[in-house]
Amino acid sequence: MVPENRPVTHQPCQGGGVLPLLWDGLRPAFCCVCALALHGFSCVFFSPSCILFALVASTSQSHNPSPPPLKLIRFCGAEGCRRVARTRGRHCKPCHAAAVRRWREAHRTELAVRRRDAAANRDPDTRARDVARATLAMALRRKKIARGRCRVCDGRDVIAIIADPTAPLEAEWICRADRQAEIERRQADNARRTAATAQSNWERDRAEALAAIALLPPAIQAELAAIAVRGPGGMRLSPEAPFYVIQLVRAYKAWLSKPLP
Image 1 (cartoon, rainbow, N blue to C red):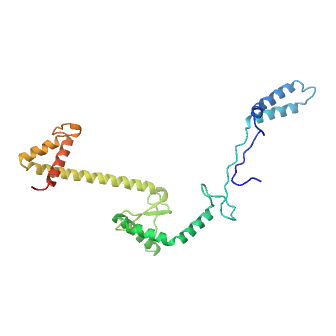
Image 2: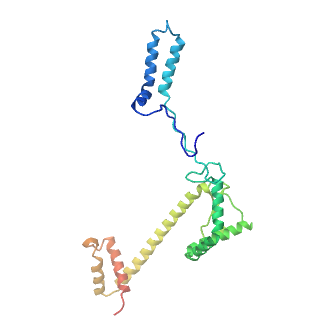
C-alpha cells in the first residue's frame, strides 16, 4: 500500500554504487551482442524464434526507458475526508468552503466593523460607483429591468458596465469574455479625452497669458522674459523655442501669485 503524500518512483536497479549504474546503461548493448553471437549457433542449438525474441527484447529495452515518477497526490487534511486536496491547499474544495463559512460566522462582528469603516472612508467617486452598483442590483432583484445580451457577441452570460454612475439603469451588458477588452477600450478613450482636455486648457491659458503679458509695462515684460530665457541646465532659450513660451507662461502665473507690496 502506498503511503499518503509520498511520490512513488520506479527504481530500475536496487542497491548503490557504480556497478548497478553501468549495468543499467550497458544492458541493451549486452543483449544485442548476445543475440548476434547466438545467431551463429542457431542451426545447432537454437531455433530462429529464440533469436527473434532476443533481438526484440534488446530493442525494446533500448527504446523504452524507465517510467517517470508518479505524480504526488495530496489528500484532504480534514478529519474523515478522503477527497483530493486543492492545488496548493490543505483541504478539498467542499471542506475549504465550509471552513471559510465557519470563520466568517465566528468573525461576523469584526467583518461588519471593517466594512463599515471602509465605507466611511470612501472618496466621492468610489461612493458614487458603489451606490450605482447597489441601485442596479436592487432593480434586478425587483424585476424592474432585465439583463440584456452582450453588445459584442450577443451572448447571455453578461455583466453590467456602468459608464455614468448618475444613471445606473442605463448600464451596458458585456459578456465575461469581452469584458476586459471593453474596459481597456474605455480606458483608452478616457485617456484620449483627458489629453485633449489638457491640451485645450493649455492653449486657452497660453493665449490668455500672452495677451495679458502684452499689456504689462516694458520693465515687467523684460523681467518675465529674463526668467523665461533660462532653460534647464543653464541653457539659454530663444524666443522661438516652444519651451520658452511654457517658461514665460509659468513666470507670468508666478508673478500673479506674488503678494502685493
